[in-house]
Length: 389
Image 1 (cartoon, rainbow, N blue to C red):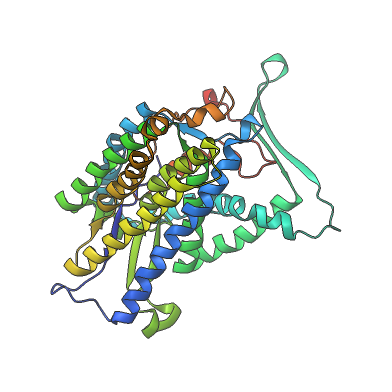
Image 2 (tube, rainbow, N blue to C red):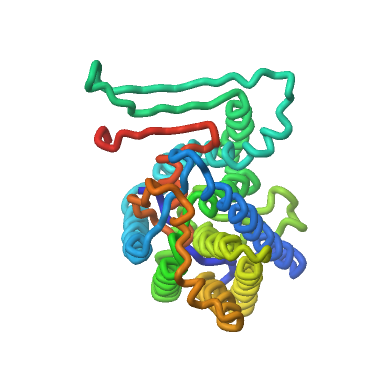
């Protein structure tokens, strides 16, 4: 199972609560940059989720999260988080992080390639032939022959993989925070795009369960912060608070777990699709929830900066992202329409249901599981034989 990053916005401090070598301007720059980076994958991921939901090919369909899946998320996430905590206590942190780095290197390259593929399609020179390729692995022979991997790609996909591979090598060699953020943003955008809630009720169950999960593991124990500091993988966005003093070699980071982006983001994307289903040529609920996310994350930063303690961001994000749109629905008299909307009704009848329950709230594990089962390009398809695993 992929690893879990704590859903806490963290600020390293001395015992007396003062920041280490950080100016007020540097702290403001770090917090503002984290806020800006969090908004990018939510906004563009939500827009891309609309196209994803309208896809014609079953292999390009998103994973749909049902209410049953949502209810299990906090339990699975808690088990994974505590398992990681024990794992880091027993085994050498160096070797664990080496293994995780290679794992996330592969996933990061694929995620970043999928993220930049629309831009590559626009800038790819027209005079270069766009050849088609296929990578096929089979099992058995004759009538019992089955596909284990059927991977189709073209020249543009190879160009995306090459660019992403350069970033991946940079990350493996230097573990630089910019390379970490490029992979983190790609994970978050893919998560918002490819993971779909089937209705608003499911979204409320998911966010409500993780709301309790987040509070317990951040305030009730030191497990989350311990795993966050031990875990070297691009499953969080980081920005140095001492950038103005040390430049690109700065090392005093504020961080935001990807779960604090992906989990509210898939709910915001659902509301965008609900807006479109109303056919009123307005995105009221999307913009309301987007503004609510900004408010919730800004409040998290303010409280963290005031009390000098890691904060469970979902403590502030969940009430804002659910409450603001609900108030708007009450004022417009559209509460019944909101809760009766079924996102899965827009998809093909054979839309795959989420069958692997990823670790969430600060982890891109949900995306990782999705990546292992679906394509990273409109022209790419994977067919995995689960019976062979």
